[in-house]
Length: 158
Image 1 (cartoon, rainbow, N blue to C red):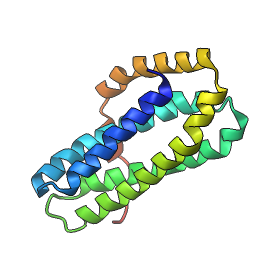
Image 2 (cartoon, one colour):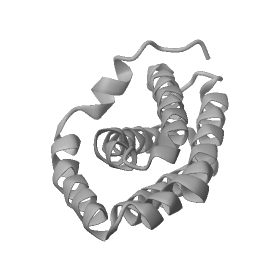
Image 3 (cartoon, rainbow, N blue to C red):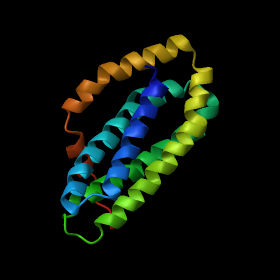
Image 4 (tube, rainbow, N blue to C red):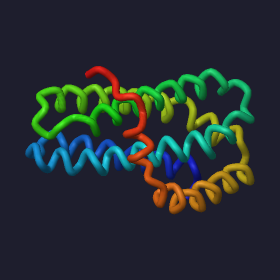
C-alpha cells in the first residue's frame, strides 16, 4: 500500500469512529474517544515525521504543508481538551463536534489537493520509500505513549 493510500485509509477509519460516536451511549463514546485520540495522534505523527518532509520536495506544496501543520496543532489541542474532560462534562459533545469539523475539513483539503499532488509529482521510487518508512515507523510510534504526548499539551479553554 502506498503512503497516500495508507493516509486515506486512516482518514476512513477516523471518520468511522466519529460516525460510531454519534449514536453511542456516553460510556461507549468515552471509550471510542481513546481510540480516536490514539488514531489521530499516530496519523499526525506519521504525516509530520515522514510524509510531509517527503512532500516538501514539491515546492508548490509548501503553503499547503504549513497549513496542514497548523491544523494538526489545532487537532492536538482539541484532543488534549477532550482527554481532560470528564465523562459527565456537558462540553464533551461540543468539543467532539468541533474536533470532527476540523478533522473532516483537514481530510477534504488533503484528499482534494495535497495527496493527489504528491501521487502525481513525487515519483514511484520516492513514494515506495515513504511507504516503507511509514510502515517501519508505525509500530515504533504505537509503542510510544502518543496519548501522553497529546495530554501533555496545554489544555485549551473549551
